[in-house]
Length: 338
Image 1 (cartoon, rainbow, N blue to C red):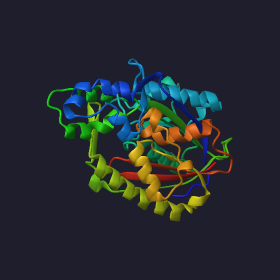
Image 2 (cartoon, rainbow, N blue to C red; image 1 turned 135 degrees about the vertical axis):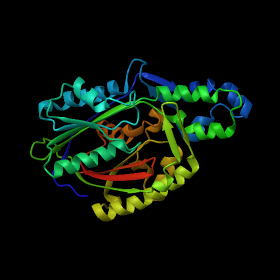
Image 3 (cartoon, rainbow, N blue to C red; image 1 turned 90 degrees about the vertical axis):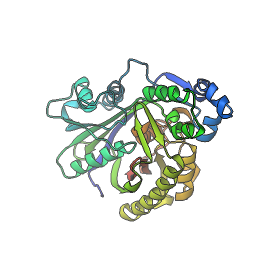
Image 4 (tube, one colour; image 1 turned 180 degrees about the vertical axis):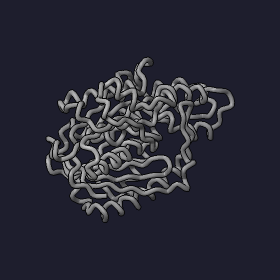
């Protein structure tokens, strides 16, 4: 899908103050490590994640999303009374209902005409929400859409460490639950607006995606834990990423050599290395944030874009590519002319 009138009006992200180092997390599993013959440091060596952050206990998923949404609205000065819709796309949830979007909508005091709903697509949720919102703006059905994601890893991390501390845990149990120990917390917000009302030059010019749902069972997660066939997931995900990247280059007319920055979902070292190798992309154009934030779910790709913007690594006219791989399997690629 190509877009002509969709602009990125603003970006904002928030990180929790509480930092949990991988070395500290591993010490809670000392007895299991000793029993399995694993040296401390195994988790960081295998994943590249040195630390992650968690929200304080009283902070809900909606609270986290509210922080990023309010920060964006304050930073941009955008008139919230003119918002057409709010979309929440967190993987994390505190409740089955109401929607997280409804809670965020109320806290941000958005107008009653502003639609609000959740979109779920695992770690690809934010990119799915962007594509949905962009289509509505391009079709002139909406003029502005605020997208938020609040991710919280506290519950799943605690549940996983309890599980792996139990008697009788095998190396296979450790391996299958390893990805849960890389999860972090963060929130992010992005505002899309029609060019008629936008004050921004940042053009979202296209989006595409591919699915391979034969592998939908490779990663199964809940607040109680996440079991992952990591090697198979990595191989199948990278293969689908290659296919989607080729599709994106053709459909969106992207020249890889002209791309200034790639904003990838921050999963871990093995995933990042494999994607760079398979897509033949330079290390210098794909920043690694996962060593300090871990895997922050649906917030990963937009947070990377927000960080690049905050660090002034994006200049007007730069070609920027967003890419995410989500359980399912699904891969999305989107192009921005900054």
